[in-house]
Amino acid sequence: MKIARFNENRIGLIEDDTIADVTDVLGSLPAVRYPYPLGDPLIANLGTLVPRFVAAAPSAVRVPLAEASFLSPVANPTKLVCAPVNYLKHLDEAAIDPQIHHDRHLGKIQEVALFLKAVSALAGPADGINLRHLDRRTDHELELAVVIGRTADRVSRDQAMSYVAGYTIGLDMTVRGSEDRSFRKSIDSYAVLGPWMVTADEIPDAGALDMSLSVNGELRQKANTADLVVSIPDLIVWASSFYTLHPGDVIFTGTPDGVGPVLPGDHIKARVDSIGEFSIEVSAA
Image (cartoon, rainbow, N blue to C red; front, side, top):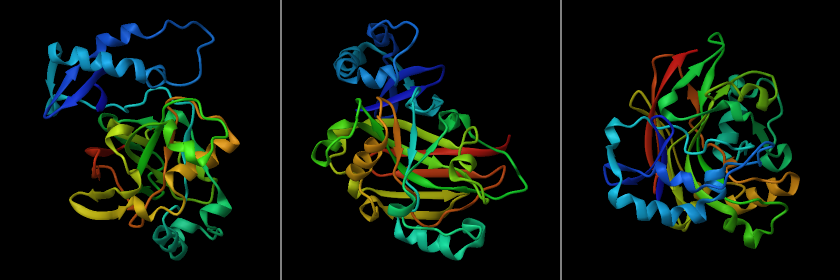
């Protein structure tokens, strides 16, 4: 199932070239009061909502895909977890490009570990990427993004994938510089997710997906998730060993080689097999 958040926070199911608007089903979500529980309530209650979405779809209003503005499919994560240099070819290209490494030692992912992006950086394809610090280089980084479906705390590897709600396409936008990764990657709109979330049952092997990214029609990144250094289940185990993952939390699994700069006016197209593709415009904030 492909679940989208679109237009004015509508929720829909992707069916061929239309969206079945099933937003009214969200009225069945449990009522909550302050202090609100951590995590995204739609993702936390996905098991209950999915059959209700299916039941509502036949009579739902249909919106053509071409007329929809796609937002991030996850609205309320508590954490955006990122895996640096998780493709060896990206580590190699970073090591020889001074605009990427800035005279810092670029260790393997096992040495530098994971990092977090601010949730305020979250954006969807319709939001666009709004560049700050135009005097510095900002790069695109295509990634497969994993959405956590239930609370995960120090999970075992054999159970790790049972915590996945689904998958979406991620762009980890990055200002180059000598500062800490989290600082440079947490600018508003620098964590793009979209165009929708594909539920885990539809992607039995997320470790074998082709992915690609182009800028203004020029192919820049092309890889397969089989080349991940640290696999998806191992990323979940690693992250949950340090902090509790909540429903709706997102793991950006890492970018392959081919990262490069973007400028205002550029047009990015990102694709991951079994998920789909989206286009997004780059502008000056």
